Length: 345
Image (cartoon, rainbow, N blue to C red; front, side, top):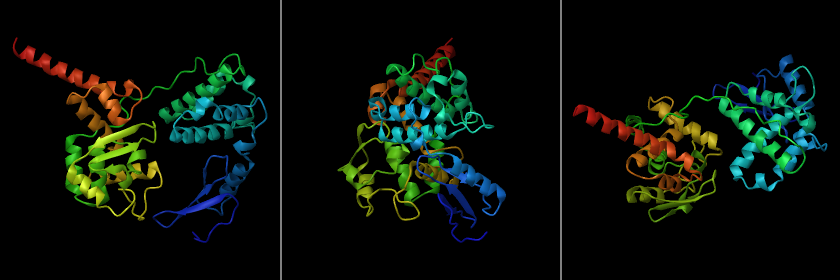
């Protein structure tokens, strides 16, 4: 394919590793949309025209519409009290829902729909369009609940159309928990470089990728890493091994982890993909940075750290985040004790 720059308004292009190009429609207030690969095809121009015809969220401001309600909600104290990362994520999801058609066969968008016309069926449709990704579907429902709760609280509606719309069931477990064997295999494969430094940081701290990519020399005082979590805005202080602290202090970069492009990782996704890729390079599938976080939480719980200690370490604001690790250890301990009693029968 011709590598010359395609000059279409709102279209950007990105070269893949195999040399081919990907094209994206990007316009303020609209979700980023990937366009067909062949820019000479009728399908490309049809998709491009559809994107042009979709009005940006910022102009859906007729009072009483869903888009207007979303704007009101995003200006509320309830929304502004959320963490910065949560606000950004919710804004992206809200913009996407506003730009979707109520019915694929018609032009009306959810953003243009009067909130007094919203029914449970509208909420269910927005949820079910993410049926293949139940966590994403439930996140939509969570945001819709917050939006319409704001409407009811402020006398914009008498009742929320979300009432009675249930979450989709999600397979239990989430990210697989890393094991000692996984980590030993990783350490044997990655003996130096950024992959080794990343796993050492994760094993020592259990931080989220949103914090992992930002940690740097300003956060290190003596042998203590001090930082404010991106997701929950909590101040955390973690003591690390002195030898590892000296290694980190010797870094000549602002952040401890640098991408292959010689700069800090630009997004949480790129950081997460890098860690998952390093696990795959070591022959380990389905293990992520969050898997290591779960490994450390499990290990700490099994060594007697209570739920409040886990909350302080991992930056959790709600004890329900810590309880599964405590309960899992207690069940394991109870099973061992039961086995001992049976063996004495």
